[in-house]
Length: 265
Image (cartoon, rainbow, N blue to C red; front, side, top):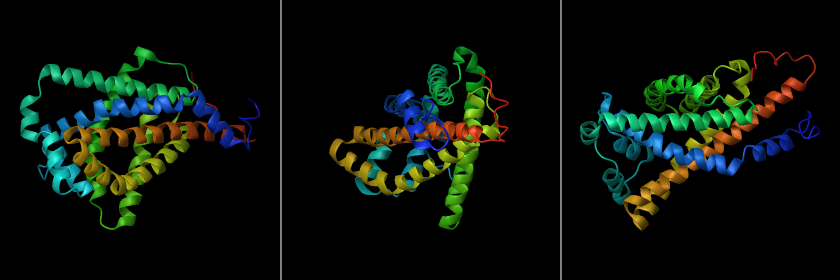
Protein backbone atom coordinates (compact mmCIF):
# COMPACT_ATOMS: atom_id res chain seq x y z
CA UNK A 1 0.00 0.00 0.00
CA UNK A 2 2.81 2.40 0.86
CA UNK A 3 4.37 1.80 -2.55
CA UNK A 4 1.07 2.62 -4.28
CA UNK A 5 0.86 5.95 -2.50
CA UNK A 6 4.51 6.87 -3.01
CA UNK A 7 5.51 9.74 -5.31
CA UNK A 8 5.90 8.51 -8.87
CA UNK A 9 2.96 6.09 -8.58
CA UNK A 10 0.02 8.49 -9.03
CA UNK A 11 -1.90 6.29 -11.47
CA UNK A 12 -1.73 3.25 -9.20
CA UNK A 13 -2.68 5.39 -6.20
CA UNK A 14 -5.62 6.88 -8.14
CA UNK A 15 -6.92 3.43 -9.11
CA UNK A 16 -6.55 2.25 -5.51
CA UNK A 17 -8.50 5.29 -4.28
CA UNK A 18 -11.26 4.68 -6.82
CA UNK A 19 -11.56 1.10 -5.61
CA UNK A 20 -11.76 2.22 -1.97
CA UNK A 21 -14.47 4.73 -2.94
CA UNK A 22 -16.53 2.00 -4.68
CA UNK A 23 -16.24 4.05 -7.85
CA UNK A 24 -19.02 2.53 -9.96
CA UNK A 25 -21.66 2.27 -7.22
CA UNK A 26 -20.94 5.76 -5.90
CA UNK A 27 -20.96 7.34 -9.37
CA UNK A 28 -24.26 5.70 -10.33
CA UNK A 29 -25.77 6.69 -6.97
CA UNK A 30 -24.75 10.33 -7.40
CA UNK A 31 -26.14 10.39 -10.94
CA UNK A 32 -29.44 8.89 -9.82
CA UNK A 33 -29.77 11.32 -6.91
CA UNK A 34 -28.94 14.21 -9.21
CA UNK A 35 -31.79 13.08 -11.48
CA UNK A 36 -34.30 13.13 -8.62
CA UNK A 37 -32.96 16.39 -7.18
CA UNK A 38 -31.29 18.72 -9.65
CA UNK A 39 -33.75 18.29 -12.53
CA UNK A 40 -36.82 19.11 -10.37
CA UNK A 41 -34.86 21.93 -8.72
CA UNK A 42 -33.96 23.48 -12.07
CA UNK A 43 -37.53 23.09 -13.35
CA UNK A 44 -38.94 24.84 -10.27
CA UNK A 45 -36.22 27.50 -10.39
CA UNK A 46 -37.02 28.32 -14.02
CA UNK A 47 -40.71 28.59 -13.12
CA UNK A 48 -40.57 30.75 -9.99
CA UNK A 49 -37.59 33.03 -10.74
CA UNK A 50 -38.31 35.84 -13.22
CA UNK A 51 -35.89 35.59 -16.12
CA UNK A 52 -35.24 38.03 -18.91
CA UNK A 53 -36.38 35.73 -21.70
CA UNK A 54 -39.12 34.05 -19.60
CA UNK A 55 -38.17 30.63 -20.96
CA UNK A 56 -38.85 27.51 -18.98
CA UNK A 57 -36.52 24.58 -18.42
CA UNK A 58 -37.88 22.67 -21.41
CA UNK A 59 -37.33 25.65 -23.74
CA UNK A 60 -33.79 26.09 -22.45
CA UNK A 61 -33.01 22.40 -22.91
CA UNK A 62 -34.36 22.40 -26.45
CA UNK A 63 -32.45 25.59 -27.31
CA UNK A 64 -29.16 24.43 -25.74
CA UNK A 65 -29.22 21.04 -27.46
CA UNK A 66 -30.74 22.39 -30.68
CA UNK A 67 -33.49 19.76 -30.64
CA UNK A 68 -36.11 19.69 -33.37
CA UNK A 69 -39.10 17.64 -34.43
CA UNK A 70 -40.29 14.76 -32.28
CA UNK A 71 -37.48 15.12 -29.74
CA UNK A 72 -38.32 18.78 -29.03
CA UNK A 73 -42.04 17.99 -28.83
CA UNK A 74 -41.42 15.11 -26.42
CA UNK A 75 -39.25 17.28 -24.17
CA UNK A 76 -42.04 19.87 -23.98
CA UNK A 77 -44.53 17.12 -23.28
CA UNK A 78 -42.39 15.61 -20.52
CA UNK A 79 -41.58 18.89 -18.76
CA UNK A 80 -44.45 21.12 -17.69
CA UNK A 81 -44.41 24.82 -18.70
CA UNK A 82 -43.41 27.43 -16.07
CA UNK A 83 -46.99 28.56 -15.41
CA UNK A 84 -48.12 25.02 -14.61
CA UNK A 85 -45.09 24.37 -12.40
CA UNK A 86 -45.52 27.64 -10.51
CA UNK A 87 -49.18 26.87 -9.81
CA UNK A 88 -48.33 23.34 -8.69
CA UNK A 89 -45.64 24.30 -6.19
CA UNK A 90 -46.95 23.57 -2.69
CA UNK A 91 -45.47 23.70 0.78
CA UNK A 92 -45.30 19.92 0.94
CA UNK A 93 -43.72 19.70 -2.49
CA UNK A 94 -41.14 22.32 -1.54
CA UNK A 95 -40.30 20.45 1.68
CA UNK A 96 -39.87 17.19 -0.22
CA UNK A 97 -37.66 18.92 -2.78
CA UNK A 98 -35.45 20.37 -0.04
CA UNK A 99 -35.25 16.97 1.68
CA UNK A 100 -34.17 15.38 -1.60
CA UNK A 101 -31.63 18.14 -2.17
CA UNK A 102 -30.18 17.60 1.32
CA UNK A 103 -29.83 13.90 0.56
CA UNK A 104 -27.95 14.73 -2.64
CA UNK A 105 -25.69 17.15 -0.74
CA UNK A 106 -24.92 14.41 1.81
CA UNK A 107 -24.02 12.02 -1.02
CA UNK A 108 -21.55 14.54 -2.42
CA UNK A 109 -20.18 15.23 1.05
CA UNK A 110 -19.58 11.54 1.69
CA UNK A 111 -17.90 11.20 -1.70
CA UNK A 112 -15.42 13.95 -0.81
CA UNK A 113 -14.92 12.58 2.70
CA UNK A 114 -14.07 9.17 1.26
CA UNK A 115 -11.76 10.65 -1.38
CA UNK A 116 -9.83 12.76 1.16
CA UNK A 117 -10.17 10.12 3.89
CA UNK A 118 -11.94 12.29 6.41
CA UNK A 119 -14.35 11.15 9.10
CA UNK A 120 -18.06 11.42 8.33
CA UNK A 121 -19.86 14.51 9.65
CA UNK A 122 -23.30 12.93 9.38
CA UNK A 123 -26.20 15.07 10.53
CA UNK A 124 -23.77 17.69 11.85
CA UNK A 125 -23.14 18.71 8.26
CA UNK A 126 -26.73 19.84 7.63
CA UNK A 127 -25.99 23.58 8.03
CA UNK A 128 -23.23 23.25 5.44
CA UNK A 129 -25.60 21.38 3.12
CA UNK A 130 -28.15 24.19 3.39
CA UNK A 131 -25.47 26.80 2.67
CA UNK A 132 -24.39 24.89 -0.43
CA UNK A 133 -27.98 24.61 -1.64
CA UNK A 134 -28.44 28.35 -1.13
CA UNK A 135 -25.56 29.00 -3.55
CA UNK A 136 -27.05 26.91 -6.39
CA UNK A 137 -29.29 29.77 -7.66
CA UNK A 138 -26.19 31.96 -8.01
CA UNK A 139 -24.60 29.34 -10.26
CA UNK A 140 -27.81 28.91 -12.27
CA UNK A 141 -27.90 32.69 -12.79
CA UNK A 142 -24.26 32.98 -13.89
CA UNK A 143 -24.25 29.91 -16.15
CA UNK A 144 -26.45 31.42 -18.94
CA UNK A 145 -24.31 34.58 -18.89
CA UNK A 146 -21.18 32.52 -19.56
CA UNK A 147 -22.99 30.49 -22.21
CA UNK A 148 -23.96 33.69 -24.04
CA UNK A 149 -20.33 34.80 -24.53
CA UNK A 150 -19.40 35.28 -28.16
CA UNK A 151 -16.63 33.12 -29.54
CA UNK A 152 -16.24 29.43 -28.87
CA UNK A 153 -12.86 29.77 -27.12
CA UNK A 154 -14.06 32.46 -24.70
CA UNK A 155 -17.17 30.42 -23.96
CA UNK A 156 -15.09 27.33 -23.14
CA UNK A 157 -12.63 29.31 -21.01
CA UNK A 158 -15.47 31.03 -19.19
CA UNK A 159 -17.20 27.72 -18.55
CA UNK A 160 -13.98 26.22 -17.18
CA UNK A 161 -13.38 29.22 -14.91
CA UNK A 162 -16.94 29.10 -13.54
CA UNK A 163 -16.69 25.32 -13.10
CA UNK A 164 -13.37 25.65 -11.26
CA UNK A 165 -14.88 28.13 -8.81
CA UNK A 166 -18.03 26.04 -8.36
CA UNK A 167 -16.09 22.82 -7.75
CA UNK A 168 -13.70 24.56 -5.38
CA UNK A 169 -16.51 26.03 -3.30
CA UNK A 170 -18.53 22.79 -3.31
CA UNK A 171 -16.11 20.53 -1.39
CA UNK A 172 -14.91 23.45 0.75
CA UNK A 173 -18.46 23.99 2.04
CA UNK A 174 -19.64 20.37 2.10
CA UNK A 175 -16.55 19.30 4.05
CA UNK A 176 -17.29 21.97 6.63
CA UNK A 177 -14.07 23.89 5.80
CA UNK A 178 -11.98 21.02 7.14
CA UNK A 179 -9.69 21.38 4.12
CA UNK A 180 -8.52 24.79 2.92
CA UNK A 181 -9.40 26.08 -0.52
CA UNK A 182 -5.73 26.02 -1.52
CA UNK A 183 -5.52 22.31 -0.81
CA UNK A 184 -8.73 21.66 -2.75
CA UNK A 185 -7.50 23.50 -5.85
CA UNK A 186 -6.09 20.40 -7.65
CA UNK A 187 -9.40 18.59 -7.34
CA UNK A 188 -11.29 21.68 -8.51
CA UNK A 189 -9.11 21.91 -11.63
CA UNK A 190 -9.56 18.22 -12.43
CA UNK A 191 -13.32 18.55 -12.01
CA UNK A 192 -13.52 21.73 -14.08
CA UNK A 193 -11.68 20.09 -16.98
CA UNK A 194 -13.75 16.92 -16.69
CA UNK A 195 -17.11 18.69 -16.48
CA UNK A 196 -16.21 21.06 -19.32
CA UNK A 197 -15.27 18.06 -21.44
CA UNK A 198 -18.56 16.43 -20.48
CA UNK A 199 -20.39 19.61 -21.47
CA UNK A 200 -18.75 19.59 -24.92
CA UNK A 201 -19.56 15.90 -25.36
CA UNK A 202 -23.13 16.61 -24.23
CA UNK A 203 -23.76 18.95 -27.16
CA UNK A 204 -22.60 16.20 -29.51
CA UNK A 205 -24.05 13.09 -27.86
CA UNK A 206 -27.16 14.07 -25.93
CA UNK A 207 -29.26 15.43 -28.85
CA UNK A 208 -28.84 12.12 -30.68
CA UNK A 209 -29.56 10.17 -27.50
CA UNK A 210 -32.69 12.21 -26.71
CA UNK A 211 -33.95 11.89 -30.28
CA UNK A 212 -33.42 8.12 -30.36
CA UNK A 213 -34.91 7.63 -26.89
CA UNK A 214 -37.95 9.79 -27.69
CA UNK A 215 -38.53 7.86 -30.91
CA UNK A 216 -38.17 4.44 -29.28
CA UNK A 217 -39.69 4.98 -25.84
CA UNK A 218 -41.63 8.25 -25.95
CA UNK A 219 -41.69 10.49 -22.88
CA UNK A 220 -40.00 7.98 -20.60
CA UNK A 221 -37.12 7.82 -23.10
CA UNK A 222 -36.27 11.44 -22.27
CA UNK A 223 -35.85 10.40 -18.65
CA UNK A 224 -33.61 7.47 -19.67
CA UNK A 225 -31.35 9.73 -21.73
CA UNK A 226 -31.03 12.44 -19.07
CA UNK A 227 -30.40 9.85 -16.35
CA UNK A 228 -27.60 8.22 -18.35
CA UNK A 229 -26.03 11.64 -18.90
CA UNK A 230 -26.18 12.44 -15.17
CA UNK A 231 -24.61 9.09 -14.32
CA UNK A 232 -21.78 10.08 -16.66
CA UNK A 233 -21.46 13.26 -14.63
CA UNK A 234 -21.28 11.12 -11.48
CA UNK A 235 -18.33 9.21 -12.94
CA UNK A 236 -16.56 12.49 -13.73
CA UNK A 237 -17.15 13.89 -10.24
CA UNK A 238 -16.00 10.77 -8.43
CA UNK A 239 -12.95 10.28 -10.62
CA UNK A 240 -11.97 13.94 -10.30
CA UNK A 241 -12.36 13.92 -6.51
CA UNK A 242 -10.08 10.88 -6.27
CA UNK A 243 -7.56 12.49 -8.64
CA UNK A 244 -7.56 15.70 -6.59
CA UNK A 245 -6.96 13.80 -3.35
CA UNK A 246 -4.08 11.82 -4.87
CA UNK A 247 -2.55 14.97 -6.38
CA UNK A 248 -2.66 16.60 -2.96
CA UNK A 249 -0.94 13.60 -1.35
CA UNK A 250 1.73 13.66 -4.05
CA UNK A 251 2.36 17.35 -3.37
CA UNK A 252 2.47 16.74 0.37
CA UNK A 253 5.06 14.00 -0.15
CA UNK A 254 7.50 16.33 -1.93
CA UNK A 255 10.29 17.76 0.24
CA UNK A 256 9.78 21.33 1.35
CA UNK A 257 6.03 21.30 0.83
CA UNK A 258 4.01 22.88 3.64
CA UNK A 259 0.53 21.89 2.59
CA UNK A 260 -0.41 19.63 5.48
CA UNK A 261 -1.75 22.26 7.93
CA UNK A 262 -5.43 23.22 7.80
CA UNK A 263 -6.68 19.67 7.15
CA UNK A 264 -8.75 18.49 10.08
CA UNK A 265 -10.59 15.24 10.47
